[in-house]
Image (cartoon, rainbow, N blue to C red; front, side):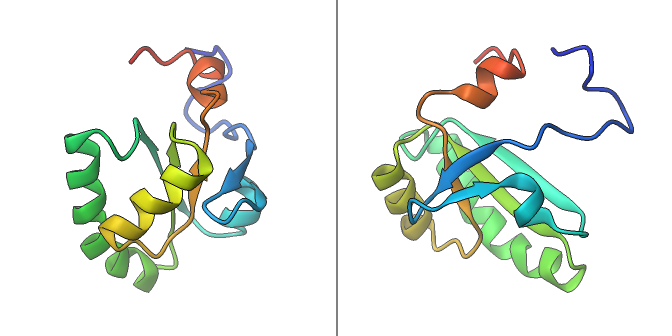
Length: 109
């Protein structure tokens, strides 16, 4: 894990393409609101698909609290879009097919 990821620190402001191929920064998606960030292996993973389906229901609760939800998937843009649509999600899914975030945060899969 990176040494600068500690309680109270600002999370890195990654810029990735969303499910529509538009480049988005995490800070732009968050704005002044709290944000839940989900790192996903991708739509092929049964556990991650189930989690995303449950998040669809929970997303309504987050919206009431002005909390943003963003998923970063290791799928390419096309598959990320299919994954998002397939679970019925209405929040941004970002594509990180190169696993930039996973490598930068030193996350072991």
